[in-house]
Image (cartoon, rainbow, N blue to C red; front, side):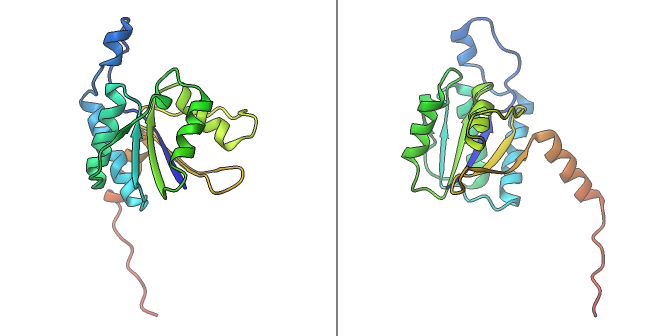
Length: 175
């Protein structure tokens, strides 16, 4: 299985009240990040046949926006294993439940989403990997240990798309 691990897109400033914070929506920049990252996934021919999200509003919105852009027509599944305070054992159980899938997009939160990533690709969890809001990591879980294929954030994606659009295509030689 290929796992696409995504941190939710920008939802503005954190709120002091936990109940209000849980209901925080994506801001305009966050919605744009979703569209951009879905285009990145499409350009990289990501095969997503399941999308699962934290139940918090900002993650669920991220998953739904990205799914819509990818043409994903099934319902986004919700799992407490992707909540901000979820533990690694719950996350492993989640992955085991989708073992027969080709590609799974899982949308969660800081800090556990990058801690899960670090533990997946190293046996002892020693890797510390920064994932900005809207970042997507591609992990090949069929490798032992699982292998990080790529990690891209919206800033890098925006820069890549901008440079590709400005540069003219080179002429191919006809030898």
